[in-house]
Length: 87
Image (cartoon, rainbow, N blue to C red; front, top):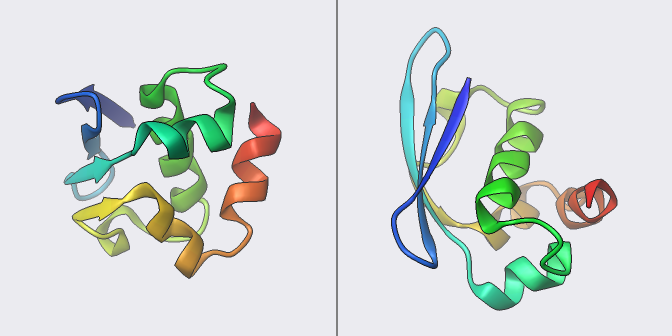
């Protein structure tokens, strides 16, 4: 289960409950949010979908504890194109 809590306009706290519960701090610049979604969905929804994407590829305990959302693309080059298709 993934819960996303907005801390401020750019910062989100993500909690992933699985065998082990993990907490992550994610930052999203408004320009990156717009690039991926055209602002058709909230940044909270973008972060949640991004964690869905990550959890299909690795365990929650392997996800960085703190990162900027574009970092996902460094590890998974298909990230941006996959996310754009969902919105």
